[in-house]
Image (cartoon, rainbow over the protein chains, first blue to last red):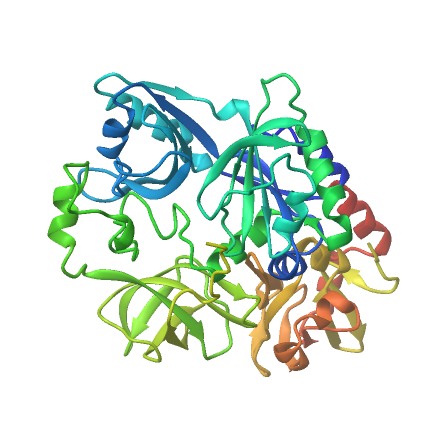
Length: 365
Length: 126
């Protein structure tokens, strides 16, 4: 049976419809996916993303060890900064994409995708070398994401801190009197915060935190948002989703994540394979918008002059752009306005390559 | 959830309104509600033939594409082209916005469908 987050009962009472995702029963929508999407783009939304996994790596060799597993470089990262990175197999394909929170040189908090938590923990733990300790703390954390242009205004009402962290920075602070990790990050392309609450700590009350944030944002139009809009929001912002744009058969270079792959740093797992591919991967990820009617979906074939050149990794409505489109992993080199075809139920539908992201990110740096 | 009197209902949540030999076919309020915002409708070609249980069209929500099955066999007499530009009409009123009209080749097939009371009972179990 799927796992449930500590907020399941509250969400059920709010009228959420649930779906199964990565071994969890999660709210897909509270009202309507399109309305929820626009709420996050124009006001603010609150997501329960407690399904995400948390792995703690401590010890004097923590940074050196984790740096040997990930493609990005955390060796010179200052404390209280977060770093996004793919984590690869020897052949350059992806175990997972993660966010590493660097508390100090001997304490790293790694946030991983829900469905990969066990696999990642095994992978990290089995490679442990030097003075390190690896712990899976996933069951201890509730994670709420407050996203949208009014997020800053709302969080300011609740936080005991006169200075909020900047983009991809975090703080140990108090929200509604509860000890939390407050991070300025998210998965929507909007400004926003992610709030990690350790539910085993005294004073932690996830339901009170959820309700308190919703109440504080009520006058600003804050609403709870489900997984459906989380997916359309991340797609518009062209943020990759493991299992779609990244997987154990796709490398980060193919997925266009070269800026998170530091081939000049010392050895890391997958470096050799990625170096071999670094000139020009045979397949690359492109964004496209439909010209013909039809909605592209994950797995649909992509054609050029009738010949198969790849497939759609993620597709659907792009609500803010009022069109349909997606991401496709294809062979060949393309520039914006080039035409491709998407095979939708045996019908070849015209689409054009566009620049990514579809929706310009609104981060506050 | 609205279920209307005088219509036939299928287990796949289509409704049929019979006018002589013509079957007006759409999806039920239950179906539109569980799909959420409908963002695309694919309608059949006029003159094409369909079997009972065969694919008549496709409705797509934000998350997924779902086939619409024909509750009766026959020939497509007319498809509702208004849905091509305004798929949300199905959300607004699923019973006034049919997907297609089929000239039935075997009206006995209607007996395999549910009436209002049986469909209400059926959706309770879903």
